[in-house]
Length: 109
Image (spheres, rainbow, N blue to C red):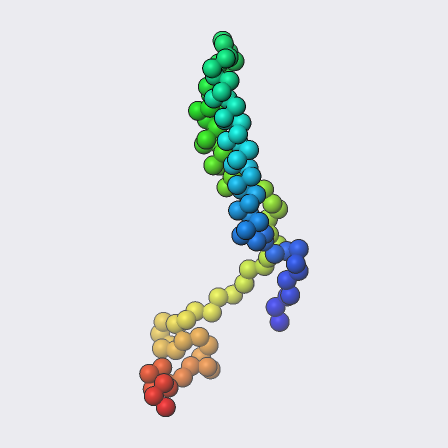
């Protein structure tokens, strides 16, 4: 019998995950906006720093928004895979459950 999953081992809901990614992206792009505005008044090395932030932050915003910050899920994956077709045996699944009738013959009855 399969182990029942705990509510704490389930992944985040898609809506919650999307909201967190949008917050991260918006925060990073807000910092980029500040860098663009500061490029008008900054001089010397500050100008280079603000320009680098304005140019590089869009890339980092996308990368940071798509990174999963949560701990890896403890959801267990299935250990064995039952093939749908075993070459050489002519049967699907386990040998004891194979039916000699085709699916079309079962539908017509």
